[in-house]
Length: 550
Image (cartoon, rainbow, N blue to C red; front, side, top):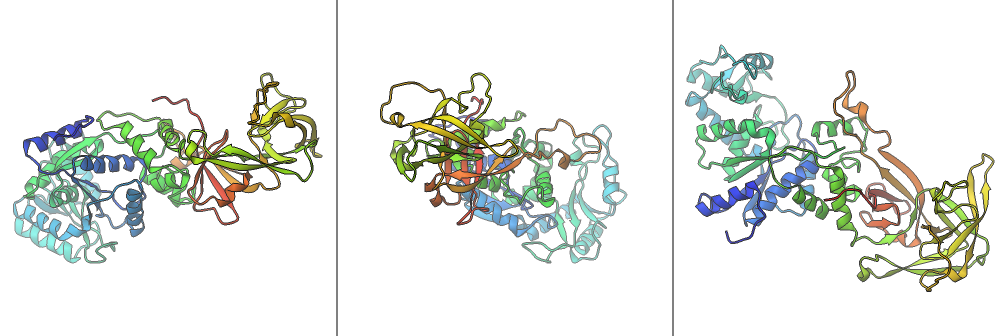
């Protein structure tokens, strides 16, 4: 292999296998179960499988491990396809595990004929009891020594629907005293009378994942079966299945560490709980780490790929700071995103010495870090909106924003000075009356007095109403769940804050998924689900700054 490669242990194995002639071409697969939407953890697996195969000019299959009809749905199949494409990858072949059900059945029959599998009548609870523990060996099932003929007949009757769910299973015959509990006669097939999204009602027995997966890899000619570390103890059984089922192809299972991110729900079961209990408004809720949720929030595929590359491939456990992902989002957006001003909690300001009825247009760069994006026109008049937090009637020391008698600069505009505070009957500040200095216009080279505060603003008469959705983690890290509490008890009630404000008039043309940097607030994305022609909704993607350092 002539290419230069950044080293990691999986890549080193692939290079060695190609150089030795063990494989002529690298073939990987991304094998999700279609029982939910993909999340950021799956993104790492996608980038590894597709990325390594691409680097070696190999192939990657997208395969749906659909062996459990109770949890799977075509909705999830479609969402997974969309997510893989959105991340920037194309599969070479599209397969379903269910495409191989007949082949798997025949391989199970082969195991029975070889005396390597038997039909068991024990219940699920009894099988668990007989299996033993990590420190105590298991014991043989009383049905373990059925004859080959009886097992073949019973297995065929299982397929024909003669038994109820859970009444019988097919088990591998390996070693009930094995030190690896996964080798203690694991279940290969169970009876399950359930409609399947792909095969309909053709089958009433379904293979277990641990049996099906190595067969799928072998059938497809996968060279390197890449999975996370929790499958490491399953590798001996993986190899046993491939060998005892006499598969022509011999895939190699290699494990890497799974992705864990602070303040992030990485369990598909828990994510489904949040969706089912309507804590969120669907799998694409911007608070979720699903690929569809991150897309809706405004994350970019480029940022996610860069993040996964930086996390790297290794076997060590650990948790990645969520700020690291946000860092890559900022790095990707800072040169792409137009700069604009938005006021999310408006306070009206009347500039009393500015001519009534006059509107002037100010010029500003669309993105100072990317001159090619050009300039934009911003209206300015007697009435504007500023942020409520940018005014204090009785400020502490070193408060440099607006307060009675203080002068500040309006971004791209003039100096203004607070002269009067208007309050309602409850004593709330509802309006400020200020004066401006026409000599201080931005861009004119004014070199007189200095001010320490610069405020963003929006001109009132042409301001476009907008909704801003501000996010925090939906679940903060839980070291240990308290007794009597469930996962849902730890939902952050402040994970979503909806506020109403204003944006510049040129934002009327903003389209769903357009991204902007709002001065001093952060990066925002036009929500594709809630935005309508007359109602702009912006999702906070990330704040402007972070203390995170690579």
